[in-house]
Length: 560
Image (tube, rainbow, N blue to C red; front, top):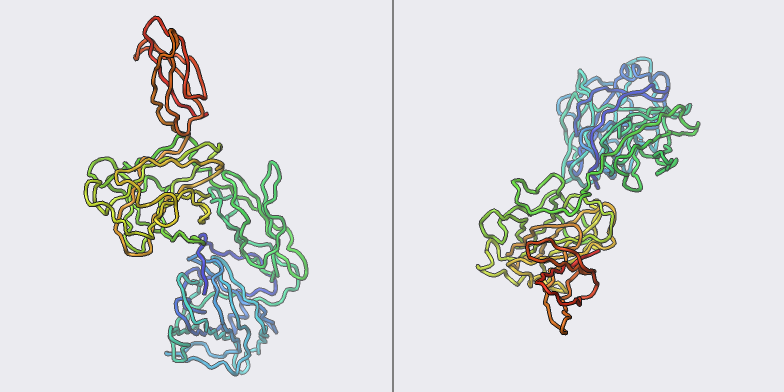
């Protein structure tokens, strides 16, 4: 089974149903064992509906059941696949299951369905029967005939989280089940009065009803830009749905009448922040499109990005990570990168020296890894820079103590930048390792060194991630980062000299500063006096005439 986590809980509310829709059960509580339990490899269940219940749902005369639906709630799943599911339907005359209900070999029953079922929650999931079942009420003679469903889960694998089904409690024992891990069980099971809500569908005789229960809900605000669209069938046996999503001013369609057979739609791209979107779902069947389908709307969250620069973080606060906008994750730095919700990064004393100067630290000693990911930035220019202090120390040792172990041949430290929703090794901006990188991990100073990484060409919404990891137990070292800065380049400080090159001519000269695009020259009558900009140059020297009075000069590197 493959299962994927997504979104939040939604309950289904009924609309006006067509003649081919028969829903039995209105309970909103949920259970996980009938029709099947996804936490075990194998299992069977039995559950029945009396003739009175079928009649009350409108199933009179002869009805062809072509689909069966089950309502999922609570946990949220997307495309949870169960293989080799077998469904048998037959007439049933009892009104309760006995104690220790037996498994029934279904060899004498026609199989209604065998195959793979995809479960997405919350909402109803419908199963198209390969062999529709025809129910004919016998008029109560000699004994009123109901329907029993026998369900076999022969998948052979299991994984959590698994589907949970709404149920309605009945007066009698109306369901039975048994599950097992080693093999398909054929022994007696347990009985319960908690029977799943079921939606029987017969072939359509008219166009379907409009869809209901949109998610995001109509008029919702604060919707994440990663959202996808969900809805529920309103009845009438739709074959598929036309999905449209657009925004106005100007009118722009992100999705325009795209066809899907599911009641979910994965959007092709992230949405924009602080934007109102409009969407519509049109159910269709062989008789045509649903009529009077509503248009729903929702508004995404305001942009949470950092937009004011320079931005700094020194990890000295009382909380770690510093705010909820930071992310701590685990996961290998190998494509495809799959991050999980835990991390070994923590707050500690910078350089393992007790005091008020704190840092973010991770201890790498074996097959471990960790990510610490910054809040989201909005870059509008391609001239920003990332600065941070990086230190490499022996576990819990200061720079003057035991030096770091140099045996971590597989250890890695990397800085990545992406949109923050997906990550790949292509997002690596710089990596330190001991194998093939020009930035040698073992050469990182235990006293810390200042790192500068240009963010050239990066615009839009970005997050910065710091990764440290190892796959072999061969060293026990600490990686630390501190004093993060994102903003304009911080040029080096020029070292200025004055030289007399003539009777009344002097020369200011200085070293070339990394990252500088020019230099401003200032003069003043005293060090405490008013400094006046007298010249700007891209060179590393400046000639000026000798002054009668004492003058002081200052050179400032600039990055324009």
